[in-house]
Length: 115
Image (cartoon, rainbow, N blue to C red):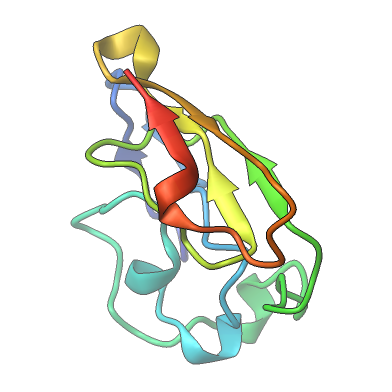
């Protein structure tokens, strides 16, 4: 969060940091657009270079990566053809999600399996 910004998470806990889209170029993002979760009080202004811990981001030609702990909602879908989140809040009546990895070069939404 820029400055002394605070937001309340899904459990009502005050936070000063948010999960970011580490696969996006931060030089082209705003505080609001780089946040994974929609946080209403995030400013829609360019990110201050001093607030970035790194200028690196996950490139489209990097290896496939699967991750969790993002508590997503809705229908499972890929962020990009090499980035797949499998956490769709099953502990909170969300979906239990898996991905059937075959020999594909690029990940494909049709390979999600969930209940």
